[in-house]
Image (cartoon, rainbow, N blue to C red; front, side):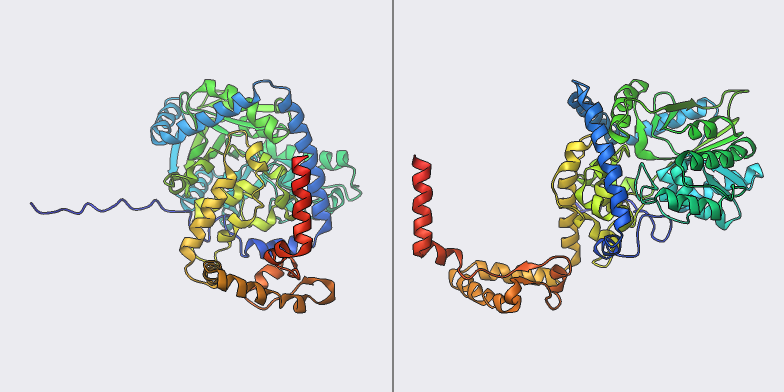
Length: 504
């Protein structure tokens, strides 16, 4: 019998580089270094995240079955990921049966092209938009602008970011890094028809944006949205929001185009009962969002008469193929993990270089793009964490983010090859595997006291050790090793005292 090699199936493609916003230009430590020098940013983020955190704890504490809801939400998402192809086909059939059109986009390039073609077919050169992480991920606004189509963000925070030629710094509160004085300047410089005497009163700023957007709601014939959920059973899509702009976009234009990541599918309409309790409480600290909009296909004479759904992959199938990392796709974009993260609180979202910042961004972004080498900025994201575990405790669908970070760190080290870090670990292994070598290493470390000098800390070391001292000082080595202290009179006295206390 002749042996036949069947080989292994190819790994699904990651999100393409150079399109959209999933990869920054600097590593996380380099970008964080810039952000840490901005005290206004840190004050704004600390105030906002602490406020949302307290509200979340209050409203989740009201529910005696909060943990059961988390367990159920997690189980539904696991079930969804386990049979995602089947559910996506069910969703497609339900949308088509109700008058919609479903498009499949393998990556950001295809998604941008599909949306552009659909908008151009309407003859409009303008679109209005509902806040959408998926369209930010694929750089849709920038792509539309490149072909002469103007996209108007209608969420107030997204509008501030857009007019300021800026990037979002938080999943839920994209303009969290701006204060009202900065917003006033942006409106005066970038918003058509704004009162030149506009002050920085929040009500006046909101009124100015409302006047600007109302005209767009009434005149632009095409809207682009994302979706919080897509229901396989019925073909229904849902968006939760706080300002009402989403409902205007979803009902007034003649054409509605929804771009949705394939992981946003849930199996049944009844599953919404779980997620509509988890999401608002975890994101804004509210029992229910002010506006929850759901739509199913096309209704003659009511709402958009042309409805398209673009199902976006862009690396999600590759993430699904990772047995450990796939649980990042359970994320429902609530941002609860950002609001409890001590690293995010200090650096803000721009340091992550991706549409998805914070702890979930540190695991989701490398899953979507892959880590292409030691110099890839996304390869530094799994290290942007203290591994304190607060994100795991806060996650409404129980994503074990710390374990994912450790796994991604492992993958990064495996692919990096032998370098200064591996050399240092190898040297430590050699020293610690022999009592004689370890004792010699301890004596050599005593030379560090000369480097530390009178201040008792080492602040600067030459490369490659400078990677440590760039971010923190090293205490001077103690005069005694632990073994020397243990054998000393002082050590023996301390041990005797401790034993006496333990036995009393």
